[in-house]
Image 1 (cartoon, rainbow, N blue to C red):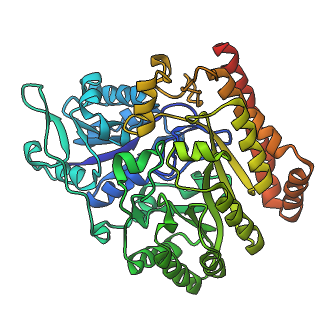
Image 2: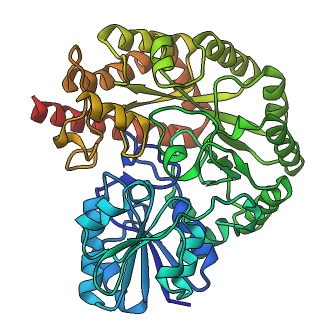
Amino acid sequence: MMRTLFLQAPTFDGFDGGAGSRYQAKREIKSFWYPTWLAQPAALVPNSKLIDAPPHDIKLPEIVAQADDFDLVVLHTSVPSFKSDVKTIEALKAKNPKLIAGLIGAKVAVDAAGSMAQAPAVDFCARNEFDFTVKEVAEGVPMAEIKGLSYRNADGVVVHNEDREIMTDMDQLPFVTSVYKRDLEMEKYFIGYLKHPYISFYSGRGCKSRCTFCLWPQTVGGHTYRTRSVAHVIEEIKYCLKEFPQTKEFFFDDDTFTDNLPRAEEIARELGKLGVTWSCNAKANVPRKTLEVLKANGLRLLLVGYESGNQQILNNIKKGMRVEVAERFTKDCHELGIAIHGTFILGLPGETRETIQETIAFAKRINPHTIQVSLAAPYPGTFLYKQAVENGWLDKDNAELVDENGVQIAPLHYPHLSHTEIFNSVEAFYKKFYFRAPKIASIVSEMVRSPDMMKRRLREGVEFWHFLRERQGVAKKAA
């Protein structure tokens, strides 16, 4: 077994590229998801090591100093971080020329050939569902025999092996949280709308929805929701309760945990017996009866992708959602005491100045506890990317999706709506949503009731203002 390093490399300051990060970028409030995509193969490789540099503030020289300790390094990469990740590999191989270096992640899953052409220092890419592909590399299986692998042969020619079959027995995957325990400091992971410290992991992969912009189902996870058994999930929760007694909340990072309602209810009842607080990703169509079961068994918050308040835009992106259904669902959550972190996207196909205002009005009307506003990002491998290229909505200069500081840009534009207008609408959205008397009163009340929340919200407020100033600098450069 090769001595293997799994690495989330240092990139932009505050850059969040973890598994739960649907948009790899620097956040408006500094936050970090766990590097689950790396921790899963790391759990399959005995005596491996995982370094998650961004949240632990580990710089490149410290990582390079360890290069001789390993035979193999596997980096998780993304469109925004790719160039920086390649430089990290070059630095590691300069220190240890015998080091074998590979990449995983959506970027290389859909374009292994292009990625390796841009990065001669990369020896292989593990495509699609890469866990066991990486395990076989670490075991020393000849690369020509490993399914799902693209690699350079002895002549330097890139060879693409046949695809690996998608997993169906998800219980064959070991706990990722054992790697968290071994290599990570959980207090370094912070998400604004989750209790701290939290733990997140997957109870299943894939999403049956067909949203045109969504990265993971179209590149790695697929459109079939493949799940671990309830017993296996609960066993990991019990492991965490023993090994991480300080955990305040568990988050299920499945693309849509509520895709299988009977299973969600079954897991909830088991969690209720354990007395844990938990949250998950959900679609805005969960029936009230199911919500009642989840709430009665420890559910605190749902992360809900509303995306837009305009029905035609929802149709354009194949969201499979009616605005009135989302409103009724949100009303049910409010009445049951379930908090919602609502996510919205500006600049999707069909966006106009009028639809932006319609979505802002919709967000104010349904009033989630907190919101995140992102810019439409056409990641390679998604249907949105194909549309953007074919219709000339994406300029080559914007293809990396972030600026030189890792802040999201507005990569798409339309004949009737410019990059700048879309970019500036994010700030307008946040201000119109949060700078309302009822919302301010709600936040102040929350802070008064909890000294911990007081410290947290004040810190977030400072970070948010810094973020707005940074965005204003980006807008001035663009102008």
